[in-house]
Length: 281
Image 1 (cartoon, helix red, strand yellow):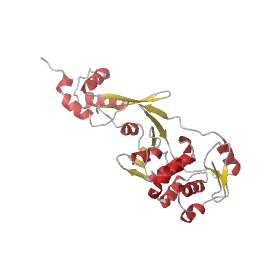
Image 2 (tube, helix red, strand yellow):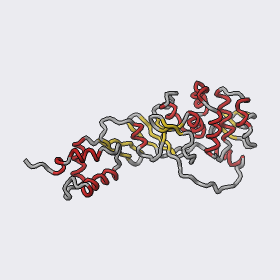
Image 3 (tube, one colour):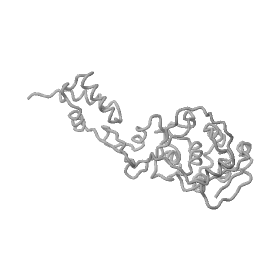
Image 4 (cartoon, helix red, strand yellow):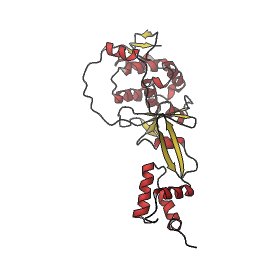
């Protein structure tokens, strides 16, 4: 009985195909072209559809994240996948941030139905030298929060893709997956309080983690983000309410601006902390 060329070369085809852990649709077509033309392991008359069917027989599986208006799909020969590896495959140089980083490090289970994955924006030079005014801050913080539309669903997980400012991945650490250090996660959550219920819940999350925070690194992270708004006083306020003393937070106090800032947006009632020059709930 005559054996077709694909079957004859199946071991070599499988070895080549399994070099990549995940494939996009485009990468599958590149694989098809390589095996068909460069390696000449299948007939030149073979169609991509025929090739794809044979890969499925070989064990190729499809995994999809559903978005509002589209689907993000990856293909792999793995029988079971790590959802975190799947998520990272969609964004180059991505890492897990905010509460996802805390959860992966075993610090909490806070919002564990969400996976926050970040991929920093490219480096940009800030040309806008206009002075920030109290009026501009007040106008911005009376408005409702804006959230990314890059949100997907995979099984019971909500996937949130974020693009923070360029820091050269400062304080991103390597564990099983790349992720924000606890100090970076702390700053990220303050900056992105809209993805959590409010500032009080973030404070409650970090009170048990106080001893794991390094306030010098927290300061450096705020500095690296080079934020337009006066977040030093906001972060200092959080740190005091987590349990640090004012004497420990002099570097943050020295950065308090004349501008009044906010812990939360769009609240009906605020209290005011004169020491940190900040409105809070």
